[in-house]
Image (cartoon, rainbow, N blue to C red; front, side, top):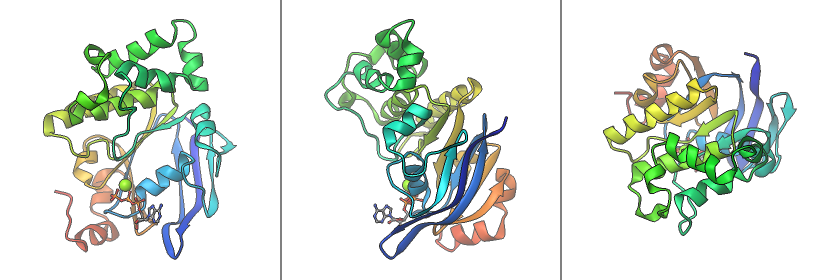
Length: 246
Ligand SMILES: Nc1ncnc2c1ncn2[C@@H]1O[C@H](COP(=O)(O)OP(=O)(O)OP(=O)(O)O)[C@@H](O)[C@H]1O
Ligand SMILES: [Mg+2]
């Protein structure tokens, strides 16, 4: 095991708003963790800070012992962290295969595809997410569930050790959620450390053995989903906003 990600006293301010407030946690190699919190809690901002899309106001982030606080996103990808976005993003006019090939051009993607070549490597990823039949079409023709799979395919093209999934179930039908769940479980069983957000605990409850909860930028709980769901402060954070876990 060993610590893969160490976040210490992380703070991010946007003007007068503190989106992430003195937040600390550790993730061990091989873990499968959820990050929950009501809308606006700061989950995406934490992912933006880890992936280098935002610079911390203060605090530090270490990945595999390396200080990555404020490093550029491509450097962080090259070290082994990939992410997906809450709102799906793709190269609209490139085929699915080319979309995935772009991320295979990262340092770790190149190393992983060295023996078989980028195209075969990208094809194998599309096959593993169930999109190989659509390799030559552009993403604009895909249903939403397939677009979410493509996000994951692009992220794994860079051969990450840590995969950040921001609301991977958002906007999906039940059947599509099952497909994405199976895919995430498979990636975890293959050794990828998974850290994923969701604002409804039910989605994550069955999936992850550990959940970190936050509210208004602050850490509020860390533990098994059954414990966190019954934590008084967590319940107040959700129920106070008229939302529940059910
Ligand atoms: N670039 C930005 N500029 C100003 N404020 C921002 C910016 N990014 C996020 N915020 C604010 O920071 C807070 C946390 O937002 P964030 O998107 O991280 O929350 P979240 O937990 O991901 O919410 P959701 O569940 O809706 O996805 C919110 O109040 C948001 O409006
Ligand atoms: Mg978010």
